[in-house]
Amino acid sequence: MAAQFGRRLRKGAVATTVAAVVVAALSASQAPGVTTDDQGGKTAADAQASPETTVDDGAATGNSRYYTDLPPLTSPSPAPSASTSPAATGATEAGIPATVLDAYKKAAAELAESKAGCNLPWELLAAIGKVESGQARGGNVDANGTTLSRILGPKLNGNGFAYIQDTDNGAYDGDSTVDRAVGPMQFIPSTWAWAGRDGNGDGVKDPNNVYDAALAAGHYLCRNGWDLSAQADLNRAILSYNNSQDYLNTVLSWLEYYRKGTHEIPDGTGTLPSSSSDDYSGSGSTTSPSTPETSTPSPDTSTPGTESPSPEPTTPSSPTPTPTDTVDHLEDVGTLKLTATAGEAFGRKISTRAETEAGKGVGKVKVRFTIVGDTDATFTGGETVATAVTNTAGVAVAPTLQAGEKTGNFTVRALLVGRTVSALDYTATVTARAADTLTRTSDTALTCTPGGEFADQVEVKATYNGAVADKVAATATLIKSADDPTENDKGPYFKDADGKTVRTLTDLTTDENGLLKLPKLYADDTTGTFLLRITTTGGATLTVELTVAAAETATPSPTPSATESASETPAA
Image 1: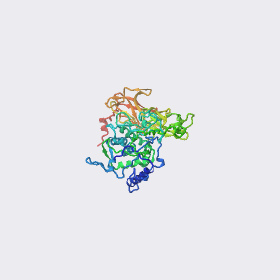
Image 2 (image 1 turned 30 degrees about the horizontal axis):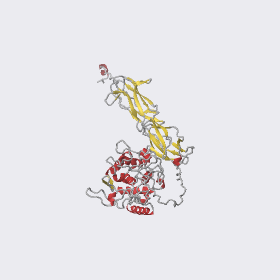
Image 3 (image 1 turned 30 degrees about the vertical axis):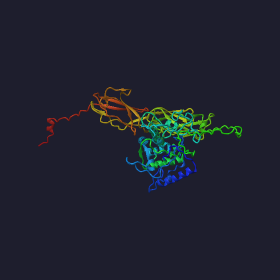
Image 4 (image 1 turned 45 degrees about the vertical axis):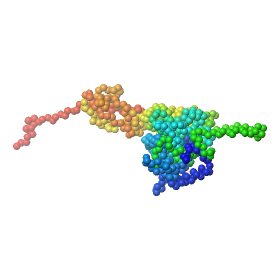
């Protein structure tokens, strides 16, 4: 009989024993997440997360429910032929719904280009998708990849799960009181707000769409500069998705299983999970995990007048406030002015303090920093969002900001995670690269005949405080005189792509060595001395002298006279 999605088993000694036996068998046959060799390759023990591998970054899912089914002990076979129908459990489990599989592979392909150093395997997305939603409920999606019904996790109301106050006004999860994990990859709304991606190119970032969710999951796993081909970084990335050792083990098991072979199956025919991390009822209920369970009180059948004295009504005690609940506002901590030259790191880090209403710092709360505006600046690692945990003084420090090539102002917004308080905005400024000195790389005189071309091209080197000034913007203009920097209409000139005369060049840039080589110069029929002025961002200026003169005519030697010739004739 096929397992029913969401079927609950009692969580206790029996489940733990069964899981231990299965994990032990997996360790013997297919060590989760690693391969072994005869040269001392990693073993299953290496796949276990050490304490320092855990990442407290909010967790994509809010550490919500996940499915604990483990893969079959028998490794899947390579994709069966079209004429065969996989009947064995292993072959069935290895089938991934077509649209879902396509979403995983396209997301991994995009990450291979945008973040090649991450080395994200599509099988990792498949493993997480299996554990989070049973591959979008067995591939229950439409042709565009959107789930036919919403997949929602439990209410994160502090009852068996973390307490996460509503952050999206119910836009994604339909709940305006607390948050719930949403979609095939189970993102909580506050994480989707910054991690969401448009994976199918429809202009919408929808956590209920498997293409969008898979691409978002890939970027989430590849943040912080992690290399997922390294076991330690792989563990960190998975734990950042759901911070649980059991979750890590389960995902690694499915990752290894899928690496050994998978095949495509029709949408809607995938194998559905049978147990989850919050199994507790022991009733074998088939309630969907997105449907909260309710209990109906038994009717009162006692005879009037024979009731036992009722206990005094008690008022349910309020949950103990978490540190996040006590935060009233965010304050800046001496960040001051944030400025950097294009391509350089900002010299200051953003520091934000979470405070109570009385102004006391609150430790162990999360502050999310998001780069906002038209900029290519990022945090270290190439991300535009970073989360930091406040220290005992209540201060969270953002990673180092790295300026891109776009100049101007942008905003870094600090927000408290898990509670709605006013955001704190920081203005950052990127200034253009600059040079303070320009010098020619040659001292050869630059000369030309009228109507000819200069034999040597002008090349200069830019420096700033003695260091190479690379990628600095420059302008070159043939000017009228040292006192009149307007463009000259006579004398030397450049040519544009169409061969037309040009006497001002803009959009010039020094190379990585601070060098700038100008195009070839030509001369009209005007003779004289002319000036070429080169200026850069930062104020560096160099004036180069150009000379246009007619070629010198050689003076012929005088012809000897007849008398001189005769006198020079030797006597007979």
